[in-house]
Amino acid sequence: MDHERAASGQRGGHQPNSAFSPHDVTAAAFDVTAALIVVLDRAGRIMRFNAACERLTGYREVDVVGQVLWPLVVEPTEVARVAEVYAQLTPEKPLGKYENHWLTLSGERRYLGWETTYLLDTLGEIELVVCTGLDVTEERRTRLEHDEIEVRFRTLFERSGDGVVLIDPHDPLVAWRIVDCNPAFARMNGYPRENLIGQSIDLLHEHDLMARQGDELLEWVRS
Picture 1 (spheres, rainbow, N blue to C red):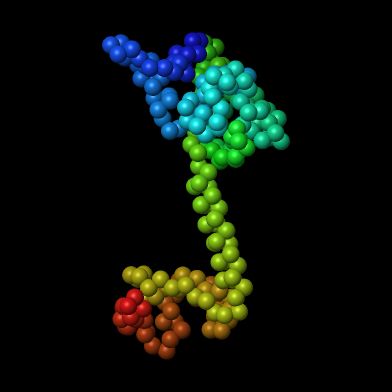
Picture 2: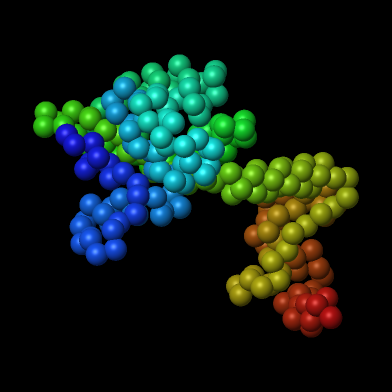
């Protein structure tokens, strides 16, 4: 197979009056896209390494073409495992979506989300592997920070000696519905926790106070 044709053409501008072909458009899109695109042969050697990959890693395509990808961007302790997974690829077992870390030339770790496509030869075997990815480092950092905050809140919520209750004042069916409560709140009100969750807070009032005056109270809280 003509690898340049399969994976897109070489970089470079076009002469002013030259006609554009589908090949030209593919080549231009290859480097204009913000997505990371790396094309590997069956041995894991880099055939193409687009501009987004260059910007992320600090490596130039001209310097990495022909080299095996893993030692360049994968942590040393992971190289053997990644190489083994790659060697076991078959047309019948696509990788699907996955995430991993790449190390940049400066040693920074970036977290990437990938999708992989195979280009097959005339015998139906994998000839080229096209990996398309996005840098999701910041999204993952935000997600981890959110998860950490959630864990801290849940720990304080569950272990607090003070009663804490979470209420939804906007539920159209159950007036000021109890979304959750901690064990201390359940104990001080004499109910099992599971019997409180989903009920109106009016369960704990002598009268249906919130059903009648909940809207007024909400306005007072907002003001």
